[in-house]
Image (tube, rainbow, N blue to C red):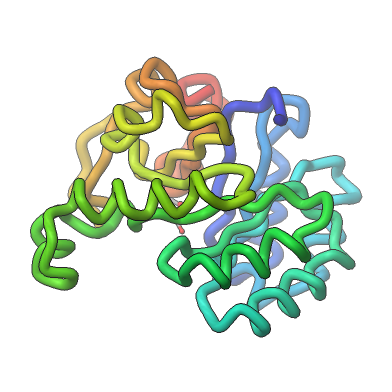
Length: 217
Ligand code: C5P
């Protein structure tokens, strides 16, 4: 497991903007996350750039499809220098198995429930309480060969026995009203057992990025 606790989410579609953010980051201090927006718009160009700058890359594509498609996508990802990547646990046991068989040296993380979804919305969508859905997904993850889980800091309480990597987005040290619903501060998340936290806008939109890196590290 990487000893860099902080993962900075480079959520932009613009190569120059990504480069500008990266110019404030130190590869010894943090990992970087490339998500859908940046990967779809800049593809291997951004991955090659980040590799040349010695960054460890978390490619967060949250794959969710039939087992064959996910497994083939993971085979294709092997050509990049990626340290961790994601699939949705809701893809089911067979999909997770197929994914872990082709992930190779890339650590495979299962996304449980997006941090942008409120407990109410989960109950409305799935018809069961939030904690029941989370426990079911956790059970599926534990029976699989997945390397870790992505969840909000509120669910870390259920992961005391979980041996894999715990990656936690939805981190806010200041109160802001945005799309993230299940949030907590960085110090609370680390104290509850997060191995890595993922922070985007609070760092990338800040006027003093270095100061924010120190605050969230
Ligand atoms: O800007 P912000 O700090 O909200 O960015 C959080 C990042 O973490 C985004 O890139 C988002 O895609 C990702 N993420 C998340 N919730 C998950 C999994 C990943 O917010 N469950």
